[in-house]
Image 1 (cartoon, helix red, strand yellow):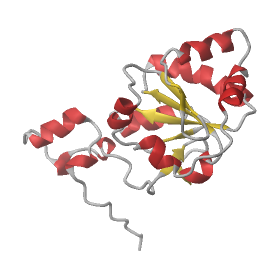
Image 2 (cartoon, one colour):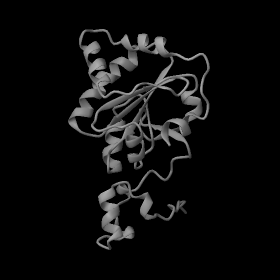
Image 3 (tube, helix red, strand yellow):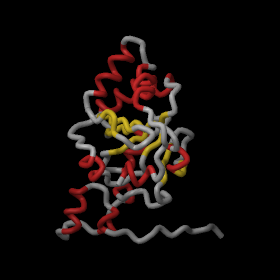
Image 4 (cartoon, one colour):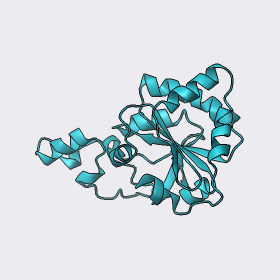
Length: 200
């Protein structure tokens, strides 16, 4: 006989899209009738990062992945603007020699869109969930956006215009320009508990 894996019971908070949450709250939709595509990734271990670069989702311990590294927080959604920037960011990611990692923070409202987009990325992502509080914390008003955090968890470049900086240096065939930024802002002591510091 085949093994049946029971999915955990869902709650209103498990719905990623705020508009759908509101429909359920008002009684215009039922939790049980909603597609699983609208729920957060409930298989993700706590404080993990996910990648789809080899096909199916693989989860990684965030502390091991981010230890001692600068972190480039990439805010985006599966739209033409963010898709175009991913092609640029891939060149930077492949060229950079400094200890760094990129983490995609999604504004996608459906898991299908999130996974299609994340499969284009050779880096990590926060598992699919509502990330509105992270967008608010870093004052992200539009996407794509990039925030650079040092190995000591200090935000060293908070500006949306850093997307333009990266794009410009790739166009003039200088994708390693970020290495200079990382060298200038590297701290002597590495931070710990990075997931809590960066994503809560």
